[in-house]
Amino acid sequence: MVADAPSAAVERTAIKKVSVRLVPFVALMFFVNYLDRTAVSFAEPNGMGQDLALTAAQFGFASGIFFLGYIVLEVPSNMALHRFGARRWLARIMVTWGIVSLLFTWVDSTGQLYTLRFLLGVAEAGFFPGAILFLSQWVPSRHRTKILGLFYLAQPLTTVLGAPLAGWLIGHHGLFGLEGWRVMFLFVSVPAILLGVIAWFYLIDKPADAKWLTPAERDWLTDELAAENAQKTGHDDQHAKGDLKKAFTNGRVWVLAMVYFGFVYGLYALAFFLPTIIDGFQEQYDTTFSVMDKAWITAIPYLPAAVVLFFWTRHATKHGTRVWHVAGPAVLGGVTIPLALYMGSPTATVAVITVTACSIFAALPVFWSVPSRFLTGAAAAAGIALINTAGNVAGFASSYITGWLKDWTGAYYVPLYLVGFFMLLSAVLMIWLSARGGTAEPAPAAENKPMEALR
Image 1 (tube, rainbow, N blue to C red):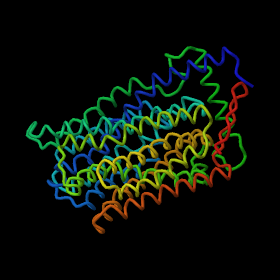
Image 2: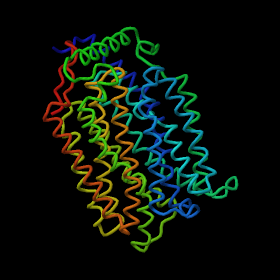
Image 3: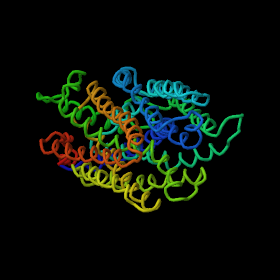
């Protein structure tokens, strides 16, 4: 039955406070995180590639080896977050990665670049799944798509704002006697260290400790989350029961990991190689771009992607999440990414790539609302980390394979067709999992309006 008026009012104000107090700060952390890991994509076509004599395959390997470092410590890091609390662990991660990122300012060989990219992955390990887990532990499942959508806005906006910022910093060639790309690394690293220190004092591990919530709001969030977790752990089938083994033996976790692989393969193929592709427009179409021109062109696909992400997740929250909220964008992205190869101008190419970016970013926050529907406690920490590990494997694979295939074939046709294949595979797997009832949402508490399963 429908909630009574006082309960509905408490729910509304509690969710609003979480949305205002926590989500923007964690999203800012994600903004800096994503900017640090993709800064190499702006550096390569603007001096670093030439200074370090990088081939496309070497750049792809340098971009991708980050994910191998991340994979090494991803699950242990998320288990540590579950044990020690998000406040301490996320703060530690940010300070560590900020220090490693700062060292890129003085890299002077391919070997050093590989080493630092690997160490950056080790330092950042667990941040993204930790942030997803942290926010999932603050709101009931029916509100998670909206909350994760607000959080995920940071990723496309990182390029919208970060690309021009990177271009502006690169333009300060000679500052402190450094090349422009080194200046960029210097100034994008410091915010991570500062935010890490602030996070130690600002973040709170659970609603029961939030003094900025009223007693009624704290009680409502605590009781609602406890009831939901009890339902998830009360099943006697293969649902996760709060332990590491159940997360690793849950078939749905592995299928979702493969779905996520396809999306992230496309995401990082664009993130790391779009600036290089745009740089290639100059020779392909006999035109000339300044550093800032290339930065603004790189940012173009990501602003519409942020807008589509916002309204797509709002629609999923309002009308109930369906399989097509994930599979539909996967199909559209899988078709449009190779289509971009056949456009006859920079404008048309970027327009089609914009559709691909919108597809990827629309689906990702909706996708991340699914694992916490059947995982809780330590199993949620391990399961979310395992799924994100598949994404990191995709990040390495797409970065290295795209560069290697470009060197081998002399063009981006084959690598981008491969991106399209993996995204279409994600759509097929999501539809198959939904048809088997593997993405059902837990029924809410009795006083709340029922939500339908993801079908």
